[in-house]
Structure formats: C-alpha cells, structure tokens
Length: 221
Image (cartoon, rainbow, N blue to C red; front, side, top):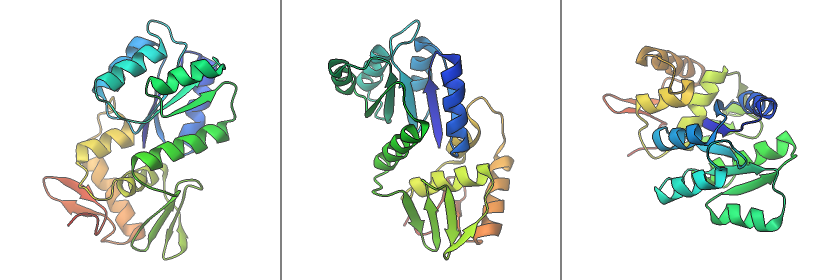
C-alpha cells in the first residue's frame, strides 16, 4: 500500500516514515504544501498523512482543494493544533481522521489501518481469499492456517491485491504501489514478484488477465 507523508519537520518525518515502512507500507515524503498538493493531484495513493502547519500552503487549504477536486482518498491529519474547534475545522474540511501531536506510533498505525480498511469496504484487519489469510495488524500471512514467510515486496503486492478484490488491477498501478512513481521498474520486475508469490502460495493464487492486469482468484467474474 502506498502512502504520501506530508510533514515539514525532518526528524518527525523520518520517524513516521521508518515506522510506516516497517509496517509494510511504501512511503513517499514531501515537506511543503505546494509539493503535497501537486502529488495528491497527480499521483495515486492509498492514504495521505497530512500535517497542517506547512510552509508554502497550509494543510487545511490543501485538503479543501483535494476534496473540491473530487479526490476521496483517506486523509489522516496530524497537527499540534489541539483545540476542539480546530479539530472540527479539520474534519469539516474533509479529513477522515485527526491525530493531535504528540502521539504514539502504534496509535497512528492503528488509525491508518482502519482508514485503509474502511476505504476498501473491509470490516476487520483480517482479509481472506480462499485458503489465504492476511492479517494487516500483525502483518501475518497464512496458507491453510500455516504461516508463510514473505519478503516486503511480496507482502505489499499480496496486500494490495487482497484490498482490491473485485477488480483486475493494471500492472502499472501495481508497480506504482510497490516501488513508487519515481522508480523505473519494468513489468518484468512485477512478474518476478508475482512468480515468487505463486511458488509460495500456489500457482493459482494470482490470476493474470493478459493485457489487463492481475487479480486474486475468484475476485472477478
């Protein structure tokens, strides 16, 4: 899953990014409002973590622009502004959740997992597809109840497909969510990760729709 982190404090941004990466997310970081607005307008993210006190453009102004343009992706607002009128203003501007600073990283992760689940229409942290079960909270994958060891790339790919059951996901979209938009990885790199997953979880784990993309078995009629 691909997250945009918008935070101008370098130390805080580094700590949050490290926490998110350790939890299996692909993270891209920007430190000012103009860069954040442009990324949100032009790139595809599963969630944005947005600080409000930003140089060049305020976080609330960015959020209002995104919502006015019809962008419905989940946004978790981080801010040192702790009064309830400011929190209400953030929610009214289109924030999906609000986390005042200082906060515990585990609470931030719990809120992020909940927002991504909600946007995918999922009610729990455990996603199932046939004999495969993925626990997003524990970052654990099992096959017929047996734990499976996956690399970070394999986990991200499987997690993205399981969060998007019901449609064929284009290869270009998967590449962006595995490596980020700035990485020039070829389709061969994606096929290699898919191949490793099939060897570990079964040849029919991921279906290939030639010319269209990939899907989980039974997810698309």
